[in-house]
Amino acid sequence: MKLGIIGKPQSGKTTVFNAASGQQEAVGDFSKAIHKAIIKVPDERLEKLSVLVSAKKIVYAEIEFLDAPGFSGKGKESTELEISADLRQMDALMLVLDAFSGDADPKTDMKDIIDEMILADQVMVETNIERRNKRIRTTNDKTLIQEVELLKRCLTHLEEEKLMIDIDINDDERKSLRGYMFMTEKPLLIVVNLSEEKIATASEIEKQFDDFISANKRELASICGKIEMELITLDDDDRTMFMEELGIKAPAVDVVVQKSYNLLGLISFLTAGEIEARAWTIRKGFTAQKSAGVIHSDIERGFIRAEVMKYEDFIEFGSEKEVKAAGKFRLEGKEYIVCDGDVVNFRFNV
Image (cartoon, rainbow, N blue to C red; front, side, top):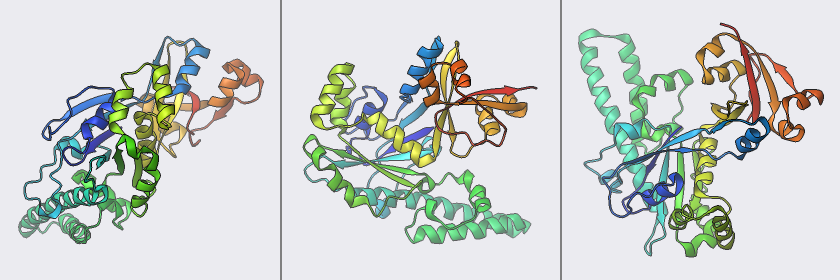
């Protein structure tokens, strides 16, 4: 999963990036700086499984973070908006909002940034309509004519200051637009970056965004980036004590991962053996056969069956042998829908 971090300069983007990634990039007004990191997704299930199966190593799921240059925040007034190809390739976006400074106005900042993304998408659509119309005049290509009609619908939608993720089009039409990588089609995690003094009133601040949140499209989280960046320098015991004192329920990375997984409809199934205990990321609703393809295309192609145990059963009974003895071990076919936390072994033949 690839997650792009955006926001106005000095909104705390890099501070949040450091807190989530464990890095120590310089913070401040470095609006043109780009930072990247690949982090391991915390999953205590793997740690417990590895002990039971005496695994030699643990392989966690991973998230790639990209801390993008700060947006201008000028919205529709912006004249030189640059959005990198790297940012357009992200699966989802994390929009960091300043809620810590004295004159902070996170709701207005959010509108400004979204206006910029709408404008960027609008310019791209207008450019592509113009290019395709030139080709249509010489070729009369019916496929291009249909594409232009769809792009015109997109343009109208964007001109109404609406996000592409909310446009009413069918699956085939949405698939045909995939190559455009619209900024406003990406699921959005709004991160309200609080000061330490505002942690206690986080729920009140979050209410400002209730009308914007939408399942599988837009999520909301509030953290104190400055404190979270300090937490990553502490050992486990001190970190736990510090979090309890401040009323922080989970580290920033856990909050970001959970919300991002929810946004993208992702879950993890697990494999466990002497070589490794590993988490594999899939979308909710994946069949056993399709899930097997995440490990290797040969396993998907030669799929025979899936041997499935619930994580909770494996922990309760302590081994595959005991899970079988308890009647909790299942053989599933290729249409079985894999669930979060399933411990799976795929049988295949190629």
